[in-house]
Amino acid sequence: MGWDISGAAKADAGEKIARVQIIINGQVVYDNSFIPPIGSWQVQLTQKGQYPGENSVRVIASNDKGEETESDDFWS
Image (tube, rainbow, N blue to C red; front, side):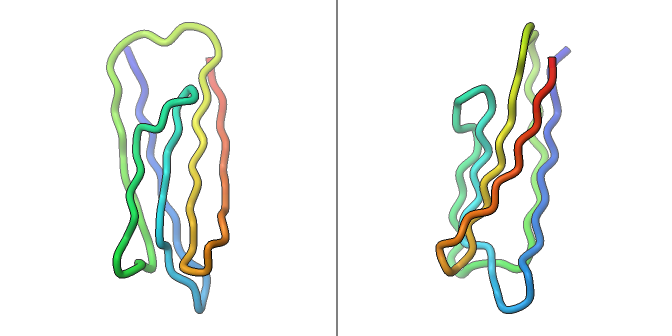
């Protein structure tokens, strides 16, 4: 029981990834800034346990210009 979350991002031409956050059920479980900024990013998080009801994950990637891109997913 539990969940696995895989996240990946690739910067557009002329941009770099400066920070990535993963928020699960309202809690920040991953927050990493990259100095220097990077061109691509990938991570897998695993959590054991039971999570009844609605669950959510939000991934926020910030580029080196301060612009954010968000992706949300939900499961139960």
